[in-house]
Image 1: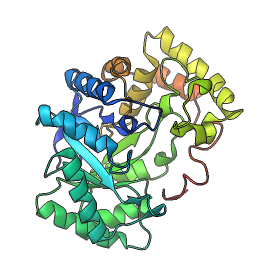
Image 2: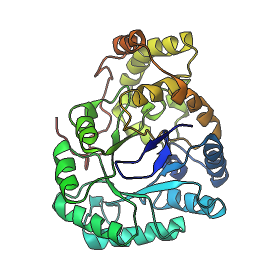
Image 3: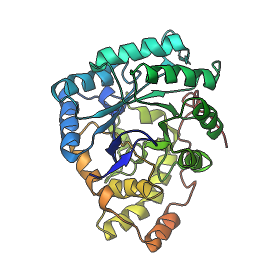
Amino acid sequence: MKYRKLGANGPKISTIGLGCMSFAGFFGPTDDQSSFDCLAAAMDMGIDFLDTADVYGMGKSETVLGTFINTHPNKFKIATKCGIVVKPQHSFDNSETYIRTALAGSFERLGVDYVDLYYIHRRDQSVPIEGVALTMGRLIDEGKIGGWGLSEVSPTTIRRAHAVTPLMAVQSEYSLWTRTPEVGVLQTCEALGICFVPFSPVGRGIFAQNFPVLSNFKDSDFRLKVPRFQEPNYSDNCRMIEGFKTFCADNRWMVSAAALAWILDQNDTMVPIPATRYAKHLNEWAQATEITFTDTQRAEIDRLLPIGFAYGDRYNAAQWNGPEKYS
């Protein structure tokens, strides 16, 4: 495993992290032992950066991580998030009182008194981002968090927040079929020395070795509500990606490894966090840090998967409640 800096002044972390949303059952039922096996495999592979959130399974993901890291202390850098209020109704809260209460809850579930990175999961538009930055700065000064981050925000929000309390990381969906961050977010992060953390870098499984089978999805699977995974969009997307899979096979690359390598090839500030709940999937990623592309190969990827090729949006109307649109 290779390593990159988590922001301009943050610690070194594995070039690939592990997204832990799956441990809460977002992509179908799971069990604690499978999650523990996945975490053990990640540790053996050299992955030391874990990404979770208080809302993942209403604390389930954090609880799983807490149980595991209790018996494997000082092995991981932990990032978690707050800001999404599920009950009594879906909303967002970035007030200092809420942030502090949420962080205390995350500490309890994780069994820690410090996290390396603390994100605002969704921006609460009723609270000026400068005020949020001041709150996070106080948490840094108090030694409760190593740094702070934002998720799914615009370049303008990033610049305003960073001017008050420098950001360690910004997170958003980014992959071969979701490239909106290229319209300002990537450039802003690189210019300011902020680590960009792509989530869903293998397209929620579309860039796995085998295409997900829709009929196998459980009712709890998050993807059932995503337009890209609904017909006829899904079949059209698979046809588009089939050529890329053949290209990977011709070069003896695992498909997910090539998709991750493409992200790492964009610049040296990115740390993708693919998610899985199965140890076996990590083996498909292992090759990513060893793949280097020639200019000819880059051009061929651009030809096979041009910007904006995906059929259907990455979120449905309800899921778009929260992420900032800026282009």
